[in-house]
Image (tube, rainbow, N blue to C red; front, side):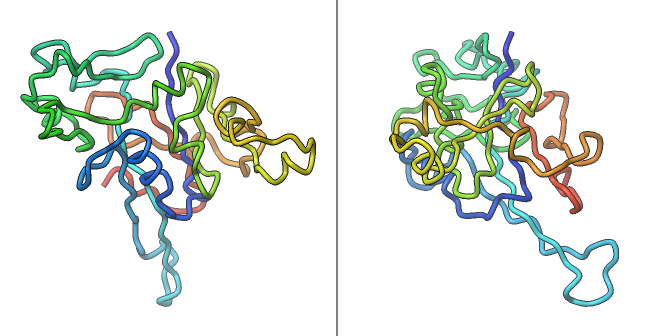
Length: 226
């Protein structure tokens, strides 16, 4: 079974919030609710702190982690929360009764109640796009080219993002906007700066749910466990 996930290269993220905005637009997320949230981590003192300039910070995007063992599914009384063969966790709105047990069970606080429809919603990993070979909207629109989408079973170096549009235009002269979704890809392995798989690859805190999303951070202190 596939394990679709998103990898975020935190050293490349500039905090532009394009992922948040594009997600809200394509998924019609109500004002005041978010399927992903951009957090600023820091500024915090580095381990070699001596002067006020010795500080670091980075941006961390938090959303549904499409966990390996999602607790939201365990507590759902109707089976509305379920897992697909591609490893993503989805919500069947026709079965959701709005009890919010799943929202309370989520350790990351990334589910919310759509009060108008009285159903719980969250990140779907843009199933409507990925099922057709496209990329999640937050990956396609990432301004810093920091987000990559792929199958964990194939390794994170195989995760993909759009290539630079202007570069594609110079090379073949036939770039189209549609290629951001279905073609013109570059892999994390092709463009990533060198990283240590043992010390630079991180996940959000594991509360027994085994989160699948991956964060790569080099040369800075990982604060995600906090």
